[in-house]
Image (tube, rainbow, N blue to C red; front, top):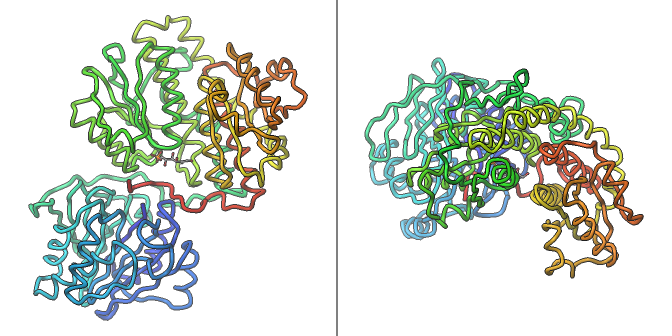
Length: 612
Ligand code: F6R
């Protein structure tokens, strides 16, 4: 994780770097820092915690200089305190780093023996000393940077500046993304194009192994073997405007409320509502050239909330299209290296398109010759660039660290793909397709109606606030949704929460139930509603406090006075996971607000997880 920026400009760069870091704060907010070269001297300001603290530090002690680098940190090695904040210095060198240097212990021992002293617990400081040791040995700054980078193992995006060099930044990418921005008489480096959006929309993405040497007049790229390489200049569509919360108290609440609209946008990319037919389109809006009829198996890989969207997708693909689906979290999949079916397709799901484990899974599937498809929100991401077919979610930028609208848009794409697969594979006839499309068309309306129960949910969230642990139960597609509810609650409120398939409770977890344990049950009135009611009875018999999320029919039939019931609109089955996402998001949100936690930037998390 972490976000890095570099600017070689013709005006004071510290405020520009802070501006760029604001756009990268989603990558981590444990500390932030800026270093510049002014009058040939290196200087830096660093501050623990969020970027506002660095801004305050810079207001008190401004930093001049027309060239500099900046960093916003998600701590990997060393506590989130100022001494561990980047940029890290050695004699004549300052470095910012995103990633993990795996051989840093070995490097630290070697550099300590050479007389370098370490002032932080980070892996990054060894990079600064390594470059400095090359300078001491008589190498030029660029040569010293190359020599140091050659020695690094692990994942890194780096930006390096040097004392006495006010027209030189060296960047390198091995794993985490890095982009060069082309200005007029200024050059920029950043973890993504959005960071550079206020300065330029002309972007060159480094490929894995690439190194960049930036000067005001231009830049050159080499690959890991130091051979000159050319990469295409792309025009970024990233907005230079910083997203704001509007009238909402938090970005997360704003994003919850945006869902009816963005689900509608996303569905219209895949569905012709006039004709009531599926019309899948790729990233550029051209008809998607995907043939599900030829597929023997679909392998879905993702992390966190995106993985849970994939789990809902598995139920849909298997039920609607009789297409066998394997699904795994990317951090397991990448090292499990499972055999993949010939004629199979691999599908990756990610909001950021930069999640390190998911990208590693993608590389594995590519090396196995699989067709690669992805469902991605960040259209200029590494994942979008590395996929054969890209299915965009049109959620817009998601700022709240906990995913909400990206999740329901992922579900919208998965529902569309599964129906299309069912049609292509001959399991869905035209009348059924028309019915399903008409039902999908109702998703924005039902999600909007679901927002009307916010007040009731807020009142109920008092019952969760302060609890030690909460269980979530569901069956079928509501099982992954229960997992998503538990994930949202724990990441936002820091209350321990776990989800079980409702039928699995009696095989062990029921031992946890007592009169202190809230149990959230997601159970619309469907073909297995009665089964879930039996599981609820088992919980009630042991004193568990049930919060049931169901529809009017379910509420009428449940017949349990002890349950608190949240009544949802009566939604068609295909859009149940989309509509029922809203109450579980709102429940986690309001519980966190009661608990006073930082809803938009929960502790220890980052929006884009670019380390494994
Ligand atoms: C939870 C959450 C995370 C992400 C996960 C994958 O609210 O947001 O679990 O879903 O880190 O991130 P992406 O989708 O960017 O690959």
